[in-house]
Amino acid sequence: MTIQELKSASETLREASEGVSDEEVKAGIAEQADQMASLAEADRGPDHGRLARHEIKLSNLADAADQATADAINAALEDIRAYRSTIEGV
Amino acid sequence: MSDTEYANDVLVSADWVENNLDEFQSDDPGLRLVEVDVDTEMYDEAHAPGAIGFNWETQLCDQTTRDILDKGDFEDLLGSHGISPDSTVVLYGDNSNWFAAYTYWQFKYWGHEDVKLLNGGRDYWMDNDYPTTDEAPSFSAVDYSARGPFDGIRAYREDVKKAIERGIPLVDVRSPEEYSGEILAPPGLQETAQRGGHIPGAQNISWADTVQPDGRFKSAEDLRGLYESNGVGNDQEVIAYCRIGERSSIAWFALSELLGYDDVTNYDGSWTEWGNLVAEPIETGSGD
Image (cartoon, rainbow over the protein chains, first blue to last red):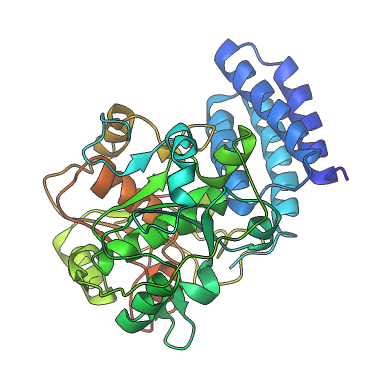
């Protein structure tokens, strides 16, 4: 079953990556888009630890990006956090 | 056995574990593999062959005293699962090894000599199609007598108070949003505090910056660069903390075990203690 929040994050990141001129940032965002797409379709959803790794990576990319791209990354982060709120944890 | 670039032989690769699966499945207590999870359904579905499953919440914490296990409970847990004081124990688990690292730290607190982490944890094992089973192993019980406690790796709130006064580096490994006080805990996580923010003077160096995208630790050179660029060197004490002491165990492991820093402690009370204390200061904001 597709995890809609992660699918949405992936789509947002994919679109954001297309407008980025910095090749390193562009590749980083595209890589995160690919990974979110994969996690969205995995047999078992990712846990807090894995998603926290992605959040930090995306935050670092947002810091290196222009404002519009950072806004898109932050929107994707909101989707990821919405999904995290549904995962059990201590 | 492990990557020799690090200061200590405490990190093993998935390949090494795979090559030793027969020994991990043997009743001989020489080698033991332990998966430490919060969500133990994952262990029930699939785990590395021979891996014992520990539930961090119910088996590695004292729920009554809200503490790590006492000595007797620690001895009973290990002995009843066929782990002897001479066993080489390899730990791995869910959540990017957070709770496996916490367990490693607890093993060291109670003085277990030879304990290691599987680099990358459960995610790396599963993502790379290493062998799995749904069968839980059963090993003959053995006697276990712990040498500890070794309190030198644990910080208490009094140590934190002194650290604030003396300017000892405090490393807050939580997310920037937790550190600033914007949120009390990551979404979905239950244990929290009355106040948001961080311990005065603490620096925010995320645990996640210690690992590569696949969850394996960064090189020693990169780890050293990460900490030294933030003024955290091996010339003074360092205290790591997070929310409940699990993510800070990753940072403690990186600093103390991988880089070989001499005096690193894990404040396992962390923000759920400090953020709830009466009459103790906090700071808010990004710290920039």
